[in-house]
Image 1: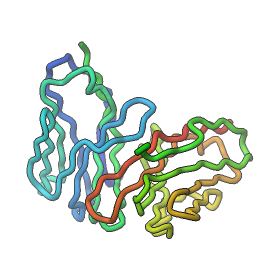
Image 2: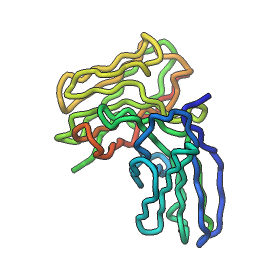
Image 3: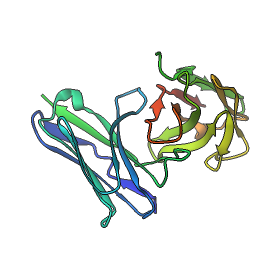
Length: 112
Length: 114
């Protein structure tokens, strides 16, 4: 079993839809949770970062962490075609050294 | 800042050949990471350096893989001899310090071994 599980999709939604992306994990030591966005033929870029449980909002993006269920989510409101990308969750037990474990990534397509 | 710079962008080689991938981290970043991305396995950490010293190389798949960081502005990942199953996109990333500063990725080297 992988430490981090993420449905690879692809996920296709119409413009303006609310998108929900999710990851589950097995290592209860994970404390730091991140979402990266990766455009085609580019490197991943950090989108959201959350420590421990709770919600974090940044514009149209909301990240949620439920440590009791070992489940994290990323919500995108009013999705735009420019949001079309692969979204990877990543997590770590400690930021010392920065060893991140990534999910496989979910490919999202937002249709105009 | 130009960001993390990787070269080459694409590499096509024959099985058995030596392959060297190069990375220039962002100036001032003291941690450097090599990742490999495939459809099947996603993004996997191969090795990371802190202040030019290898800290964790447990992700390096085999002895055919080696990485060096001779100075703060340059790192290499070498595969010798290469095999078709090494075909993947190899990313280099760097970060500042050891806290919650973000990881900055390069645009990767797409390696194809025939």
